[in-house]
Each structure stands twice: as structure tokens, then as C-alpha cells.
Image 1 (cartoon, rainbow, N blue to C red):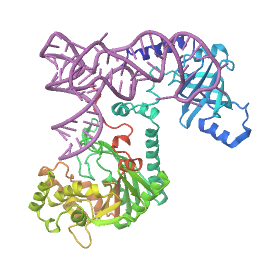
Image 2 (tube, rainbow, N blue to C red):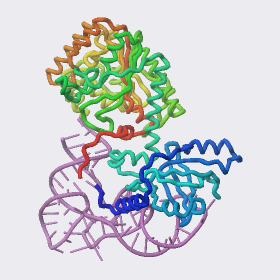
Image 3 (tube, rainbow, N blue to C red):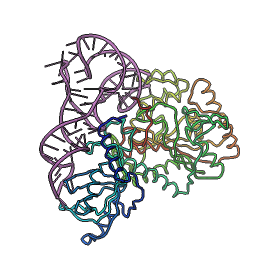
Image 4 (cartoon, rainbow, N blue to C red):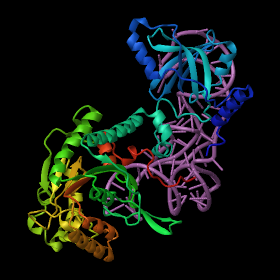
Length: 492
RNA sequence: GGGCCGUUAGCUCAACUAGGCAGAGCAGCUGACUCUUAAUCAGGAGGUUACAGGUUCGAUUCCUGUACGGCCCA
């Protein structure tokens, strides 16, 4: 791409000059005795009594370099932090210093020496020996402004991570969030499992799957859109509490809120109901927030969110009437709903079922208003084909969705474990599919068979990890919380 | 899929409403400098202005198309 760039040419020449003097450009035999963090801890612990003769072998990437002719200060970084080193011609020999002059910002080095305090008080490694550990032939982005170009940041995330500390923090936080969810569930006796990413029948969600093909088996496969039906098979198999944190794939548009592959936590607990899960969810999100942020409120974009306030629960219909301005008398009237949608300039693409129209209106009119953590319950059966019917109203399900910061974060329900009803629901979905709904569920006979062996009363839930990471890192785009977001092939 | 905006040196950005030799800072190079931390000082170098066309005596600038990206909408 920039093979002819002068800077790169010059650095390649420097590398060649070193190689010509029998300097290894990519050795791997330097032994590190202390990471940056170790040395900093040592200094803190020793206070006044730092041993000025103790030897430290440290390594890292040169991040800054200030040369004064016969002496040079550098800052180098390893995973645990940055440290300053002072390279003086008097301390290493003259030849070694001449070689060192061929080192650049971006190169990896190993330095052996003692620590001392500079005039300004900064603890610094006084080099007795310095070695090149890896020559970088491309320059790092500018030190002060970092890397700004979003396209470059995503395509060359390694540069983004090197130059922008806040980006690094986001991904460390992401790892901590996932770990906190895992800790919470393991503590409660859940078993972490892995279920197929390649499925002969994609199930568990309304979405368009990616198709692939297994040559040896001669069979079409789909990348999973959700792990749900496999996790419930495990509950049937006697694993009463299971969870999985992993990728699902949906063959849909890419946006600030959607990446074709995204990470979900799904969990199932036998002998629990959707009510139990709502309580657990509230505790789990509080636990994760406290673990990761150390406090219980945070700011997301314009909104400040307090996780300690008891989470509101409202029914879908109350939400639609209170926050969406839809008269309750309209709820069962398809034509009036369509008129209303038109008057609000909301385009309805799936006009078949009332439930779908209500959900669309909810997405546009209500969802953005659910800033503080809020559970919405009372979802109609027709849009919840895997959820148990409510004991008091067979037209709605024991289902909830959790909204925080105006976004859906979780979706859970008491599971449908009646094989006869499940089969009927699948058949309804198949009818929808035949009527043109490409996102309708497929019939999964094998899953119905599994239910016929008996699934205990169970509740389950899926949590959008990327979205929750966005909340806790105040990221406006999902691309800021996925290391390598999907982009089109680079053009030239 | 639609609308708006963007793409200029390795990086961050200029070059306007006026179409006239494409500029700066950082990085890099040469020289000076043995306690600096966005080191400093002096000098010099670095460009197919995303790509392909068009208008024009002349295009980074105006027009058309393409690619990629950002934001908004679907």
C-alpha cells in the first residue's frame, strides 16, 4: 500500500544496516526478569531503600525517544505499563551506543541495568546493556494526536490499541465484564458449555442465518443465530443450570448497533420462572457493574443511569399506551394500528400479525425512552414461539425483556416445555415463513422429540454482551467494543 | 437499500464563498547537544490530492461515476 513511502524505505535501510553488522533483527533469547509493573511495585515497596546495584532485565516497545547526542531517554512499554530508560554512552560502550542510534520508536528492545531517580524524580532504568528484540519497519502513528481515522482504527486495530489508551481500556473492561458474568453464574452452580455454531436447522431466534456447506457430509449448515435450542436439550439431559457465552451470527445489515457476529450470554435454570430470572438478572447486572466500574452509576451518552434504583416492571401494553401514546382500544385492531403507524411515519413491513405491528411501534416509540433499567413483560404468544404461555392469559407469554439506556439488553422467559404446544407453534412459524416471513422459525422436529422426553420447568435468558459493554464504556457504536468489526473489503 | 458528509505526506490537519506553483505540526533524515519527558536549536527531504472520467488555457477545488469509511434513516 505504501511500499514506496520514504519513511519505510529509510527504516528498511536501517534494518539492513544492522543486519549487515551481524545484529539479529528478530532474536528470541532475551530473558526478562521484571515486567514494568514488577519494577514499579518494587520501587514503591522499597521506598527510600531502593538498591541502586540491583539488576533488572526489562523489555518492551519503544514509545518515545529523546536523544542528546551521547545520551538518550526513551520510554518503553510492555503490557503492564510504561517505563523510562536512560541510555548513556559512558554506561554502555561506544560501539553499542552507535548501534543503538539505529533503533527507532516502534522497535522492541531488551534493557538490562539499574534503577535510579532522575533530577525530576522519575524512576528510570540506567542501561548497562541494550539489545534489539524486534525491528519495526513501519512507523507508529503520531504520538500526540494518536490514530483518528476510524477506518484505519478498525482495520488496523493493533495501531489503535497501541496509540489510544482509552481503546485499550474498553477491551480490558470488556474482558472484565465477561469474567464477572461468568463468576456470578459459576458461583450459583451453573455449568459453562459449548454448543454447535454450525447447525443443520438454525433456531432460537427470528433472524436470517448465514449458510455454509460441509463438503464431506454433503450437507448444508447454518451459522447459529442463537444457541437456545441446544442449551435446552442440555437441560433435558440433566444439566439443570447451564450457560454459554459465545458468538451468534445474523445475516443482516451492519450498523452502529449491529455486527454480523456478536456475543451473547445465554443461561437456563431448571425449576425457575421468568420472575426468578428477573430477580437474578437485577442482581447479576448490579454485580457486574460493581465489579467492573467499582460503582453503581454511569453515564451513557446524554443519560446518567443508576443501577441501584429498583428496576421498574411494566407490561408491553402499558408501555405502549403510557410511553407510546397508543390507545388500549387499538391493541387488537390491525387497521387502526396501521393507520396510527402511518400517522407517526413509521413504516410497517410485516403487516401480517398484530403482534408484529405492536413490536415495531414499541421499537420506535417506546424503546428509546426506557433509560433506567426496565423490565417489560406480557409479550404476545405469536411473537414468542419458544416461551411458555402465561397461567392467567393464554394469549401472552411469561416473557420479559430488559431495557437499559434505551436499548434492549436481555430477553428471557419461562420455557415452553409442552411438546404438543411447541409443535403447534413451530407449525405457525412455518406458515409465516411460507407466507414470506424470512425470519420466521424453522420446524425442528428433533427438538420437539427432545421435549417429549420431558424438560423440567425451566426459565432462560439471553443477554447481549456487546450492548452491555457499550453501556459500561459509553460507546456510541458497537464497532468500538468489538476488536475487529466487520467491514467491507478494503478498496484501493 | 436511501440521504448527508468525508478520503490531501508515515500520522494529525490546512489550502475558503475565488479554479492559478499543494502547506504546517509531529515522525523520519543531516548536524549540534550526557537529566529529557509533546526535549530544544539549525538545515534539508518527503505528494499519482482514494480511483476513473468530464468541463477548463489551467482542477485538491466544479461536474459525473466507482471504491471505502462516518453519521442519520429504513
